[in-house]
Length: 114
Figure 1: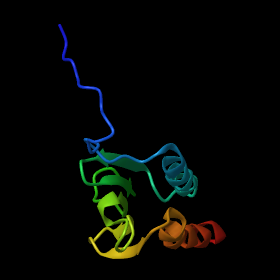
Figure 2: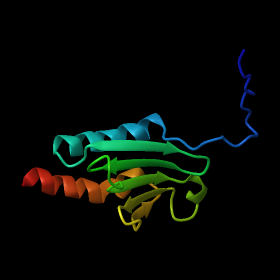
Figure 3: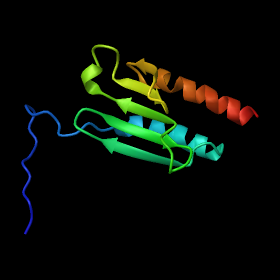
């Protein structure tokens, strides 16, 4: 008939990493403004055990222009947020989402200003 899943308890690690509502709202706000500027056209969200990834595409058939990664395991080291370019280079890493998104925000200001 159906599968019965165990109720998660406080002692167990979550089965996947995810964005919370405030984080996703901030990311989608930026994505919407980039779509309005005509720069991005598609996105993908991947949720895995160790990482949650938001990928923004110029076209759906390409590699993502930017990936925003959340890795809670790096919270006490470099910071759990990372902005990764199309080539795989880490552009910005930090403990807070706002400063990590700053390079994309500046790029948006340049696009809108043109």
